[in-house]
Length: 435
Image: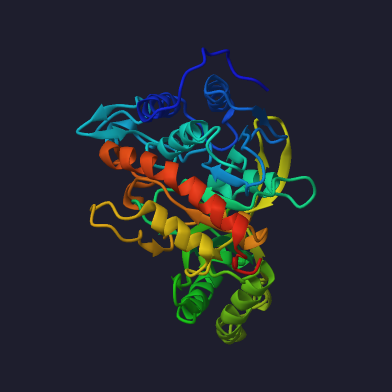
């Protein structure tokens, strides 16, 4: 796939911001990134990238060749975005790319089209100045579990850079990891019936209190990491089927949002859910048997205690704009780099602090999940994050990118990339073990 022909031009911060405005004006929900991809490709070609292509899922890959012999650095910022919601709730239109009050406003301004534009221009600006190649890989489907990055870095034929820099906003800090995220579903089965005759049915909703009690127990027993903090799990949805309000539902699904630590596996998570809800379900079923023992003529009494409960990882049938489909777990793995890793220390020194007083940048984890879970947590590629923008604006109707900070960040990227390239090429690294 190639983009529209554009006149060659030099990379610059102002050019990156104009590019970011164009990107904000192109909505790109997961699976709907194609129009944005054309615009990104056109920019890479205009900036003189040595190679520009898309993969099978439609993720964009651009390459700026180095002088030879150096480590390969991959810059990455995803193409998809979350929905904007009601435009009337925004101070500025979400898809206008407005610049006002010293900030770029709109959906994607800092998550992640502003940083994507900066990374794209920085790589071109470093052409001929670094020894190793710079790969700029912008994947699809990050917001729904990272299918694009999982595919880009697949063991059989995928990208294998020496180090990855994720462009999720860090407010100028160096991010070295985050908790992962897994959606878990607890499905209670009953027997549907007309609401006018509840004795003929077995209400799946009756099992929900026991399930929620088990989830609360599970939430109280979460492990903690010295850097990433505590894992957390919470029920975020209850869906009943059939959905008609005059029908007793025979299936209820309780959805859990679980922020997990590196090393957690799907199997271990599901086993812990089952263990936590089991005693509460047993007490609930025992109580139902006692309540039904003295009642005659109720065909549901003997079955009330036997409602099945299934615990499973949530999946989603995802369809890339290229037409490829796959059933995917809703899973974003976690990861953590050693804060003393030479790549991390080189990055922090190269970026420095924004106060002009010298010293290294602050090193910390993100609060949210990123594609770094795939590159480092699963594939074992040393990964860190750096970009302007405040995490508190992500996924909100106040999303914005401070342009003064962005200009500073653009300049620091020009120092960051060669610094980590040198560190990755000369010193053994120690990413967290793949989970």
